[in-house]
Length: 159
Image (cartoon, rainbow, N blue to C red; front, side, top):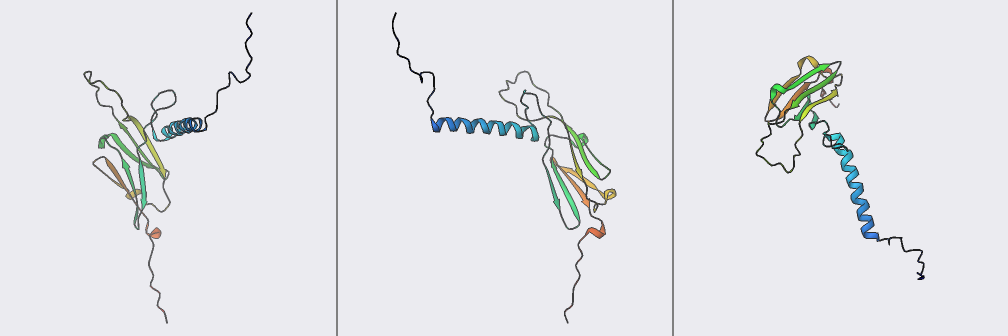
């Protein structure tokens, strides 16, 4: 029988600070990306498609609030805007184009499907005078303010 020298550290992998920390950061970045994709639409952990949420900008102006929604590839007839109980709701659907059999897709990142965005309206909005326009894939909704909510300028005379 042959004797083999015992080495207690034989199965321990050496620690490499640069490569080990780099792989930890990459793993952490992947986890953060997966979490953020769930909020903005994308793929879930099981590969299933997440709901598509179009980006929205809300700007306050002197006489109105303006909501701008990016809806590329969505037709005007596929969008519905409602106001109920002081909540503005924008619903619609981005329909998938017919896939062509002769195309050999390597990657598809465009998101499709139904979407819904809802926003609580401030009490200063005249909900009966809301207007919307749709142009080049951008939906613009004008939410006029009531007269009392508009800032008034009063000139003060100094004696």
